[in-house]
Image (cartoon, rainbow, N blue to C red; front, top):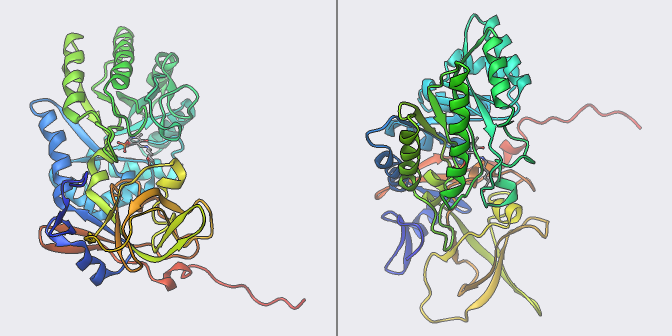
Length: 426
Ligand code: LLP
């Protein structure tokens, strides 16, 4: 059993749904990202069931995986999108998504991005500073529009997660101090180009417990009441994303753990009429993908065994950036031949930080295939071309059919936008 239900062993070979990963590696080469369509659907279903009977809009936090096929699938299932750039908005539109279900987050929205979002007709701007409020109002007025806005408040709660992905503490750059929020909402009422529609927070990522959400929610409820006393009525409450997934032995909260408590808290405060917006990224895609990689060499020294593979930190940055743990499976399980060794799984990049997994017991030989698990979120979307390595292809498996949803980059494309300059004699 692996941690990902749609990536399981059949006859000793790891499959994506009903296709052996060995076949995909043969056909499309490695390194290769492989996603399961059914895993996306199952993850979505958990949110749908949890939301049943209530007004909930799930806006997929698309920075986790912005492949058009993934966006299109979630759009078909009824999702909106949480975007953080003009580029992400363009992807939503290219995938046929509905801009009226888009919330626009991020601390540094540029004028062109604000304009594009207004033109598209997004549901809401999640505003992170007074300066941004003024800029959005000015641009909207200029365009003869009113921009729907929420303030992203910083509730100062500890999400108990990695410091790099914790966002709801005062020391983070995100959001507006919740204590200052009433004054900033007042300021918003005075600006001509704005429509106040909601309040927003996002406290971090890979959260495994419900309590940080409830702490934040309690503070937001107090704020919503204080605003009502000032005559500011909100339509929605956006609790951001952050629900964690199982990478190894975590037991994260589920969408229904979260939503049932949210509904309870709202109802008991007479706020049951508010629409709930969520922005989950990782929990919708994280365990829907693996990174397939081939062992190039085995190298042993006095203290270490290295499995040098053809994927690297440019393809999957999380291990070295966050010290993140990803499971590693040998795609074709070897019966008994060969010794089990403890390996660091490393890539070909010229950096000591180029590792994908450390101290893993593996029975492998050069040429074997490995699957780096839980690589559906923040994996391809954070990939780069460092060391002039073309980014991998992405495959979406649907039952027994494999679809190429992104071609492998060509070496030529790496420098297609570059040019040399004329020779200048010394
Ligand atoms: N909404 C906002 C405003 C966010 O900043 C994020 C993620 C999300 C939603 C989605 O959060 P999720 O449900 O995926 O936790 N690269 C890191 C994670 C960074 C998360 C950034 N913000 C990683 O690989 O762990």
